[in-house]
Image (cartoon, rainbow, N blue to C red):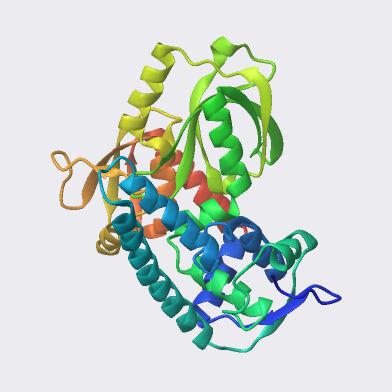
Length: 346
């Protein structure tokens, strides 16, 4: 059972162009410097649910089918025959997909697998015959499968520990301690977690919460949200994180009006002049896109109902293709930001 361990815990495998591109991009997004680091992270956090771990995956599917048939008045023998037929079909499709991954070969590289991961490969893994007794082929299939998942599912794998900690804190109603950078300084915040929610376009997941500084009283806590992609330092505290009915009502109202990505700041009417290119940008750039007020927008000046923070984050990259007309505070903020950037080229 399991793969044989070599002296240096090294495996060799190749990735398809698609997988290598996505792994490189995720390394950039998650600030991971070495390929070996992300390979070990994916292996640790994904092997339990991956289809590449064939037997373990099919065991979960069997449990799923057992729950479906539970309570139904059906002959036990017939039920088992149906489940076995479904599992046989599932295995065929999984193995077909894995063989396709194995056929996609590029230049191979050697990766060092850490001790904890190799303990799993050596002592717990049971599908080694399918992979011709080569651990590298299994790890390849695991990474190829990971690379073809939607982005939010990949985030859940890379940030598994943080998701688990937040979900436990929500269930147990416990405070979290979160360290974030404000003005390039680490600031510790106490967080009253509410829910993990995705933005309206399902591009990212956020922790909707109340937060305060440690020295502030609980009455001073305010509605906020954190992009889980950007969370690095999170720990669970022993204190309770009680939220009143009024506080829950407020955060739910803010989520509805501002979206979970921009819970800080009030919703305003933002007037923006867009060039023809700017209009094309607006049509194609969906992430963080603010809601357009069709009743008040003209041919070139659009009116958006959102917070200044959302408008700033969204329109900053438009450059000369967008001009903030109102409010003056946002117009001046963008003007100062562009001037600061221009100084670097002077």
